[in-house]
Length: 118
Image 1 (cartoon, one colour):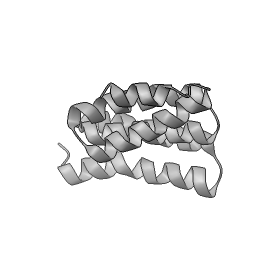
Image 2 (tube, rainbow, N blue to C red):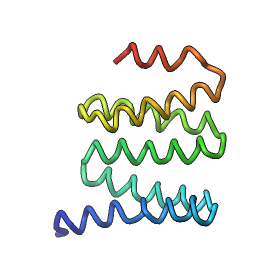
Image 3 (cartoon, rainbow, N blue to C red):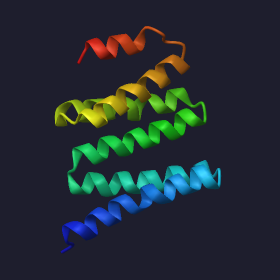
Image 4 (cartoon, helix red, strand yellow):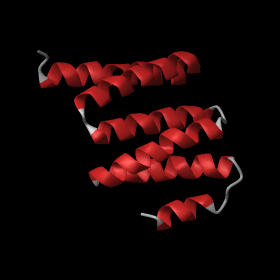
């Protein structure tokens, strides 16, 4: 059985690799794969806040590539998890990325709808 620290490392290490792949190497495919690996690991821990943040990372990666439709789904799921967990950092990040995704799709009223539905 894994200890809490080992589980945290196994879940968080792919996130660091993803940002290196995206930011330093411009390899968005590798970054996406690392974020997906991290997402699976965080889901296995049951940590809703880190799942929400990982989903935000996937949304941000899609947004950086101007894939606004792709960014929307993880942003919305992240928003739901952040709301249910009550974590304000995850909530603000999810709202911001959902705003970027919606506005990128030309839905200028969308961010206000989601804010009011909180």
